Length: 286
Image (tube, rainbow, N blue to C red; front, side, top):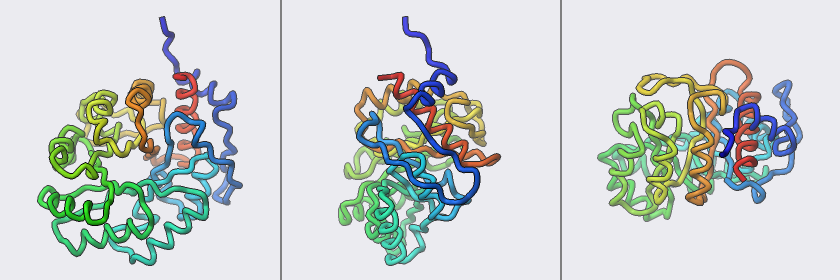
């Protein structure tokens, strides 16, 4: 019989060498540790919403210190809807120079307005973004599909839980995209999925064919809650082990992006603890 892995066990495993991290004691940029991508069974990343109160340069330094090489940029770090193509290109070049891959974005709102939609597509292309995480208006889906084909751009529609009137669950997104071009898929936010009352691990497996991004987090909010109560990964109600096992079983090739949303305390410390917990859990699942 397999003994369940506790949060303490996972953190202990991380501390034994899977995760060695010099935590920040101030906002000064810390030296970057070598990225570890090929040795890890999943592609870990950071959604920069986790570091939304830090300027871009400090967010980059934090991600590098975590030994993560994938980043998804929130609009506070680059406004994909409103910035110029040159500004977005410069951000992409900055990330590349830092050794980071721009794998996604904060949620980009796509309305049924071709000029505005086209601007967003031009901006993410200029920056070299792999997958645009987005929320298209339902009426805009035909337009979005046309632009996805034209720009050869992968899109991942993000679910936001019971308060989201358009895309509350992965199931709703699936029914919206299943007959559209294969470039358009899902970004499953496991916290919002669980808060709606669905099992996140089941959703990851069920929609694996169009699963292009994952936002990983933890929460103590109960199912049906209209407001999230985020905590460090491993400290909440979500079955993180089941989710990670599922991602390994489906041979998920996308990025698992930490989205640490807890307001209180130092976000770098909470994010680091979350990354360490997941690295420990992945080591145990091997």
